Image 1: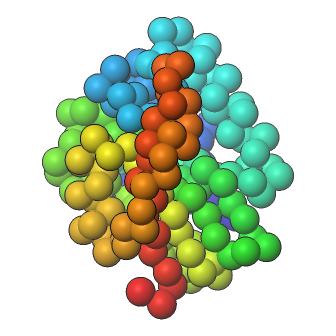
Image 2 (image 1 turned 120 degrees about the horizontal axis):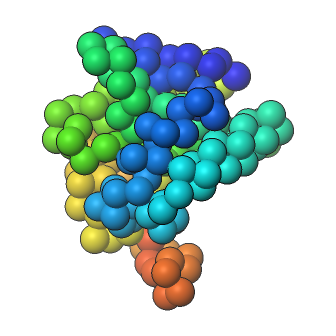
Length: 176
């Protein structure tokens, strides 16, 4: 798997343990983690542990997560990647997060666009999925902008903070 992807304003680079201070700052913000399947982090070691777990999954070709680096400032502004890769069925689930100070500036659209291109062109996948809480309006708008199709609501599909939550399922096919 390619460890770096480039856009006009961003570098997506495979996460490293040395990214943990920057990612901890992002993942400790309750506004950022509100719709993620994690609670906001309270200790930098949680970020380090998460990166190590994601690295293990990447070595097994089960996941791949990138740190999003803004080229102008050379600052890590978020992360994105493939949460679960299913090569047998040529599909993947994507996930993404961005530091609050970078919301609304087109960075997520730019990062996810290059991720989609990589998945369809180089990994030769057929389907990309995203699962989003119905209240996560910003994420839904991003997926709509990228022409993902809404497929329906997975009722009480996951547990979050001890409660079962619904997830909206969106997908994009190579032929879309």
